Amino acid sequence: MDFLKSNKEKPRVLLVEDNPGDIRLTQEALKESKMDVHLDVVSDGEQAIDFLMKRGKYAEAIRPHIILLDLNLPKKNGIEVLKEVKAHESLRKIPVIVLTTSDADHDISKAYSLHANCYILKPVDFDDFAKAIRLIETYWFNSVQLPQE
Image (cartoon, rainbow, N blue to C red; front, side, top):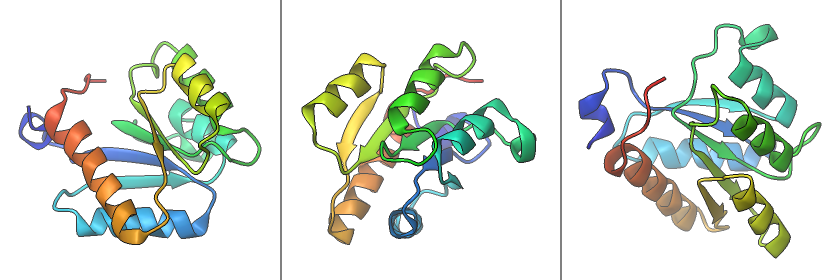
């Protein structure tokens, strides 16, 4: 079922990324897509949890429909964020897409053991990166039915 047809709001994505270049790449890739997506960005693991728990300056944050999560983050790494998200009753249904440069077997295995919904290696080339973002959008917002909050 098409997300946009079944919901009046536009899809919300929380990008948890500390690299300004990768943030810009994601923003540009989303701009090029045909889908109108609201992107929130936090730059470390502690901010991600505060955003999701609506704490501090994120008290008015709106829950994302999906989370794009880098693993290599300051303060609290992506594995720790994933563990907290999937352990929390009200957050665990949010699909978490690990989008990272790490192709280490232990990172992949750990992410899936903590119930990551998928693990994608960040392409270096912008065209490949944009294609990966379009595939994420197509799959998560046009192909699957996401749970309502």
